[in-house]
Length: 372
Ligand SMILES: Nc1ncnc2c1ncn2[C@@H]1O[C@H](COP(=O)(O)OP(=O)(O)O)[C@@H](O)[C@H]1O
Ligand SMILES: [Mg+2]
Image 1 (cartoon, helix red, strand yellow):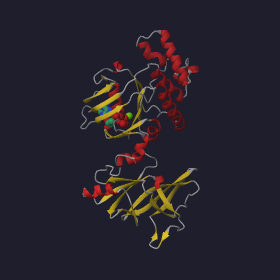
Image 2 (image 1 turned 60 degrees about the horizontal axis):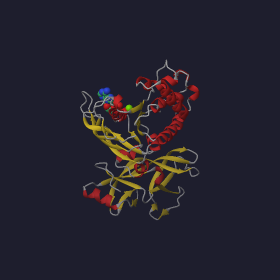
Image 3 (image 1 turned 90 degrees about the vertical axis):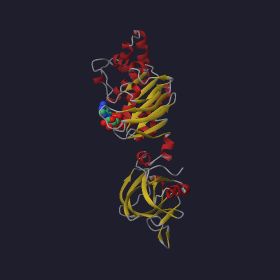
Image 4 (image 1 turned 120 degrees about the vertical axis):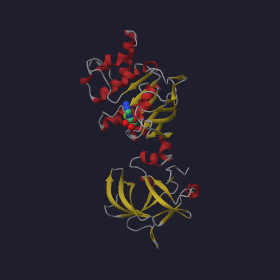
C-alpha cells in the first residue's frame, strides 16, 4: 500500500493554449478512497492518466509512496486501472482475462490460478470463470474488469468512470460493492466520475475539479456543509443549492421583505471589499415555510419571500417544490424540499425564510466562501 501525491502536476496537450490540468495538488492517504469529480472536460481523466503514466506530466511531479514516478513507464508504477469500457479481451475466458496481466509479468501458472480464484470468490464470479465476456451481463463484465485489477495486488487502484456503462439501478448497487470491496482490500484508490452523487457516496474524500483547476478537497460532509466557492456550492448536492444575489443592508441581507441574519463577519468582509451584494446559498431542505393559508402573517404582510409554486415533484417521503420568487426586482427560480405530506398545490404561494444558521455566504465578485 502507498500514498499518492500530485505535486503541482500540470498537463498541457500539444497545441493546447491552456493546461488541461493546472498545478494539481492532492495528497491521497494510504488506503484512502479519493474521488475526482467535475463536469465533462474538467481534466479528471487527464489527472488519472498522468498518475497511470499514460500522459506526460509537463510540470510538477507525481509520487507513489516515496517513489517519484513522474517519468516512469506505466508498467513500473505498480498500479492497476479499471477503464470505463472495461477493455476485456473477447476471445479469452473470464479466468484468462483476469490472469492475463500476471501471465505477461511472468507469474507462474499455479500462482495465477490461486489469485484469480480468490478474486473470483470475492467478486462472485466463480461460476463464470470459463465463460467468454459476451456471455456475461453488464454487471458481471464490470466485475471481471475489477477482478483483473485485484489479482495484480497493486499499490494503487485507478478507476475512470467504471460504472457509466451500467443501468441506473445496477450502478447504485455496484457503487456500494466497489466502495465496500475497496475498504476490505484497503488499497489506495483514485476514482473518477462526473456524478456528484457517486462521488459523495463512495469517497473518503472528494476532490472537485473545474477547468483543470482543483476547487476543493474535502470529506463529503464538509463538501456539502462548507463548499469553498460558488462552483462547488452549485455542483455538489441534488437538487442544487439555491444561490441568490441579495443586497447588503444593516443587520444582514435582504431576502424579499425580510432581513435575514447571515454571518456578520462575512457580510462585513464583502462590504469592506466594496461589494454591494453577497450571494447567499440555501439548500432546498433549509427553508422554513409558513403555511400557504396565511399563518405567519404579520401586520406588514406575510413573512419571508413569496414563492409561487410552479412544479411539484412528489417522492413519497418528501417532495421538491420548484417555484419562482422576486428578489431585488428580478425573477428567481428556487427549489424547496417539503415533507411528503405537506405538498403544496401548484399555483399556490408559499412564504419562506432561510433557516438561521443554515445559510452560506459567498462574495458575488469572486465566488469565494465568506461565511465560515
Ligand atoms: N489527447 C488529447 N489531446 C488534446 N486535448 C485533450 C486530449 N485529451 C483530453 N483533452 C482535453 O483536455 C481537457 C480535459 O479532458 P479530460 O481529462 O478527458 O476531461 P474529463 O475526463 O474530466 O472529461 C478537455 O478540454 C479535453 O478536450
Ligand atoms: Mg474522462
